[in-house]
Structures are given as C-alpha cells and as structure tokens.
Length: 92
Image 1 (cartoon, rainbow, N blue to C red):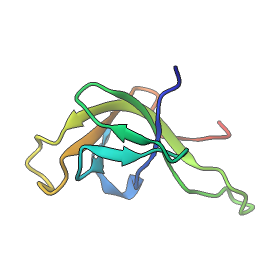
Image 2: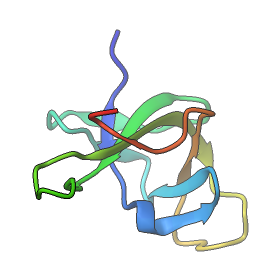
Image 3: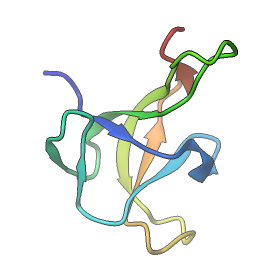
Image 4: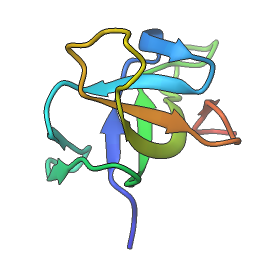
C-alpha cells in the first residue's frame, strides 16, 4: 500500500530531520483523503518548489509521524521525522 503524501512547509523545520506536521489528529493528503495521524505512521511529505528554469519540481521526503514532545511550538501536536534520505527534489 502506498504511503499518504502530505503537504508540509519545509520552512518549519525544528531540527535537521524534524518538521512540524499538524495541530490536529488528521491531515488531508494530496489525493484529498483524510489521514489519521498516529505515532510511527510512515508518510511521504512534500512542498511546492520549482527548478532554476521555473518548472515545477516539488521538494519531498519520507518519514515517520511522531508526537511533538520537543517543547517547541506546543500548538503543533504532530511532527514528521525525516528518514536518512533527507529532503530532495522529485526529479532526483
């Protein structure tokens, strides 16, 4: 089964491999499906971006949902821990 693909803002990184994900227990994926977030859930995340010629080339990563226990941005309930492949462009 494919992992849900969820939009994030990579400008909201709170560690080198950790990005804010959601204030709520659900998030809509790129297909419009409602995804229930829970500890350990594997997801793909993305953000709109373009390459140098101005063509669409989204940033993307894969990772695991985890509760926001960092003490930072307490309004955010869930984060995504990005795997060792890091953030890359879809064309890579």
